[in-house]
Amino acid sequence: MEKIFTRAMGLLLFLVVIWGISWSIYKVALDFTPPILFAGMRSLLGGIMLGLVLLPSWKRIRWRENWRAYCISALLNAVLFYGLQTMGLDYLPGGLFSVLIYFQPVLIGVFAWLWLGESMTALKITGLFAGFLGIVVISADSFGGALSITGIILALLAAISWALGVVFVKKMSGTVDSMWMVSLQFVIGGAILTAIGTWLESWGDITWNFSYLIGLGFGSTFGIPIAFVIYFHLINKGEASKVAAFTFLVPLIAVLTGTAFMHEPVTYTLAIGLALIVTSIYLVNRQRKRTA
Image (cartoon, one colour):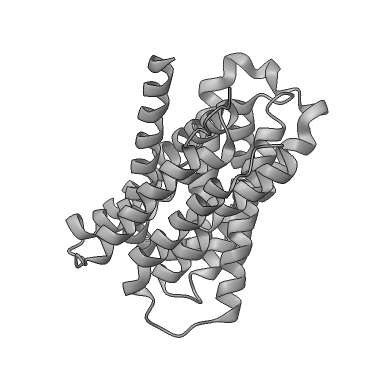
């Protein structure tokens, strides 16, 4: 049991590091590419790469029985999540947008309680909102700029689509192969986003330099297939809300990465935000004492 717990913690930490550093990598790459094409290409390539690895087990796809599940997952976890996220960033400061996106763990806690039958206690509710407050504190310094109702709505819709997508994948884990679910959701979703990007944007606006290729390469290997395989593996093995609580660490790592490599300022709010996030993870994962 201890070995399994240690392995799960190692995977969780690896996951939050991947997603945490990806914000800075993508931020640099987006200076050289239209956003929807970038989201579509890294999703499509990531899904294809994972599919090639899974090819020997292609019979597990069972397309006729599961195509609806693959399409719903692609819509929620790729098309809507990345599409709404891309559009919303044009309307809001990055800090505020990331706060709204990372309302997702709170939503997962609610949706998992409603549709997966997971427990919901006062401690868990307190923990989820403490983690969200930690994200608010960490990102508060970058709230500058005009607020947009459109941007707020798009960010919240992106968070809702991601939360619904995670709960849907867990709900379907007993009937659909989870690895193929990850691969095909990004192949389908990435193809749709690339098509939308081709229609709305221009391939000629892509600058095929080192920074862009690093962003595309990272996204299509670590950022999407590897990260989401780990994430959904952990979600399927444990309570969705408990795993989701650890993703509160992602914006913290993103800020620390920006501080270390992009010379962004360090503020006392980081320590306050970290304390709230650690408290959140403890409260959400705390086991209730059993009565004799």
